[in-house]
Amino acid sequence: MFRTLAKTTAATAVVCTVAGAGLVLDQEYAKAQSDTTATTAATATTATVGATVGATVGASVGASVGDSFTGTKKIQIDGHSVNVSCSGRTHRGEPLVMLMAGGGEGLENMAPLQKSLAKTSRVCSYDRLGEGASDKPAPGTLQTVDDTGRLLTKVLDRLAGDRPVVLAGHSLGGYIAARYTPDHTDRVKGLVLLDATIPHLTRDMNRTIPADATGPAAQLRDGAIAVNEGQNPEQFVIADGPVHSAGCIPVEILKHESQYAEVPQYGPALEDMWAKGQNEWLKISRNSHLSTAKGSGHYIHIDRPDLTLRTINRVTHRAAHQH
View (cartoon, helix red, strand yellow):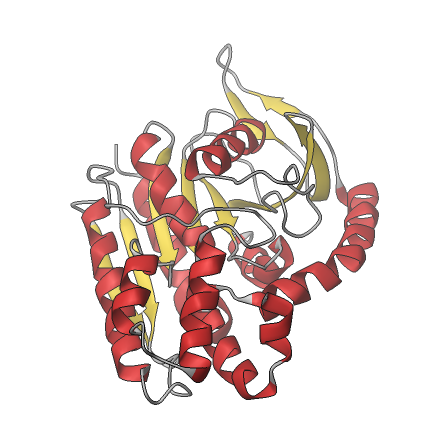
């Protein structure tokens, strides 16, 4: 279905535009799959050159700042090979920033941001199962928030050790970070959402593009819902659900300024849907703030790297000094 949709010339521009706004349709996923071979080769080279593997043991017994290495390498988690990348200084007590890319994107999508953040912080990223150079999920299985959360916990165990963590996620990565954080406030001390996939995307898409819609609009709606139901490389179900509280940790939410101009019939309604969904994420903390990234589309960290860098650095500073 998705390859046919992506090849339909009339629908491609519409699909790509809305896919970029967190609906992650086939063309993004097809690109990610075609890049996997090159990414794997680059990963192996980087790991050989840059990795200095091992946990740094702290002054106090049992304390750890996580694996101390620079570069990209594979780690083994529950029988799966998971591609990870880390850079920047490792200082005890300072938060580790974990970058989480959107659906259909490997960690290389956030590599320029990681390089900038590494000037002042320890920062890592990883490919979820089915993305980038990591293993694929088992055939015929669907991944849930609990599944991807368990993987994230074990990645953080290796890379962050006992230090606090700031999660910074784009699109689907932001959705996963936002679902994960309320249950892990012992570790996650700050959160940045970059145009995160909204909490009730399936419900809101059905409300925004009605059942009697035809043509590209209907393809858009049906394709997005299929992706939400698990028809994606991660085999991940993007489930609707309420926003749970993470207490009072610092949370910054950035949303795009304009993304749906090429969908004139439903563009304004889709923008309104997305804005209301971003407002829903404010419920995650009593210390949350939402702002619009002026001049940006969905890829805020690419369109506005300056704003993204300032926002993550600000949350990281607040997370380091909140106690």
